[in-house]
View 1 (cartoon, rainbow, N blue to C red):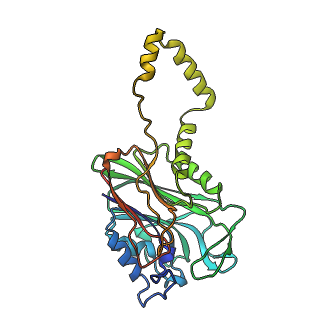
View 2 (view 1 turned 90 degrees about the horizontal axis):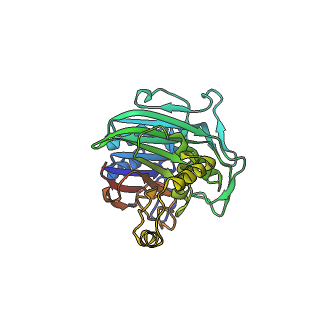
Length: 321
């Protein structure tokens, strides 16, 4: 199957040099074309608009679902409101507070404008789950598409969506997430996601824009797994008990054992390592597909193809599950 993640930048069309282009008469058309080209079986989307004026009032999750032929999908609103140049977001007074999740049954419901994360799939879904993260108490100066220099940007609430899907070899769990750009805050969110899905079936695939690079995401997930598995005191007691129960070996036997091959620990790892940002000239990888419980032999080629929308490139990988 084909697994993908894509930060949409609210479906913003971009020129080959990265400059914003106006939306066409059908504002959802560029997004639909980009999603259809991925031909993904499971697709995580970030920076998704729903009924926003800037993107032509499009329900972008619904447009993407139709383009890829998704049998089921969910859009989790991180916030309800409208973007503002300096304030970040202006809340919608009549909108629901906190987390709100929309699906195929809410298309055309006339709900207030919102913005968040989506997870779409062609596979049967056993279970859906959503979680909202509070924003960091401070923002950072960032580069914003269409503006020169750095722009002060406040942090915003974040959401994650999890789905237990039915694969050819049994159930597995997929998570779509968009994490804070504030260092440290995003790592805590990622560790929280690992604990949040602990009761769901493995294998796990965690997809999204984490605003983290290199080995940091898999290190954070691996650390959360270890901490969740056992507390330090319990682990020390287990090791001491194991040492007392272990038969005593002669010096020669100990030396032979030390020279023998050691089993390789199987933990979280990246299914794709390639730059995804900025889309016109990728230099860093903010977008990731991480897994545990997926044999490396089950992972096929990965790609970050060019798209006519967004300042991120989509990340696509083939996996046998």
